[in-house]
Length: 235
Image (cartoon, rainbow, N blue to C red; front, side, top):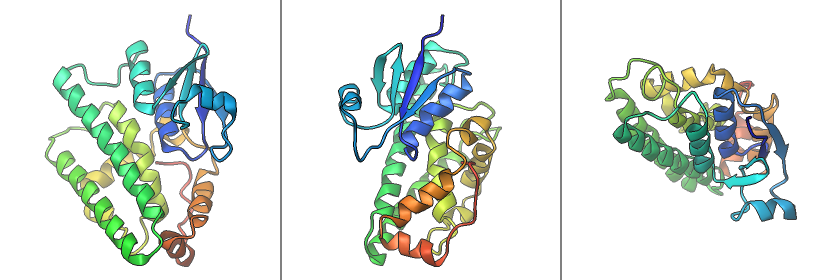
């Protein structure tokens, strides 16, 4: 008998999206319970030592940290989303860490107060996508996803990254994916994946845009001058 799964979430958390994608790929029913991270309830802090989402409750037992949650789900349920070969699996884990570092770079981008700092952060993010472009272009993969035709945990890890590109990728200095065909092809494949689309609510783009404007930084000012078009729930 499958356990009862409850995903403790925040509406904009990209790491929650990773877990939701994996749950959907495996066809696992789950309840999603949203919390306000600016006013964390005591019951949540008792479950999450770091005070962060996601937390997955498995018959009431908590697992925290998205990578650990996704690994548990892949160990426990089919279809397997990690490569079976140990070396390839280790490389995928390393790229999942790279995805987390890329999300941290994005967070630094929207936290910039001035244009100079924004340009420095943009260069860092561009370099990260350039590294991805080189890895994808040199992999000889035969399909649209990271390793080819199979959607893997590493794809679930990167899908939320591209949602930020939907928000700011049209801005001058932040449109660097236009020169990265392999990353762009991968992004497009993720955008149409049903599990990715359903990992967020219908109004996610508007909520993310409002969140960025609320930061009152250089990126917020740029978005006010050139708001993005509605992009739906695609990655």
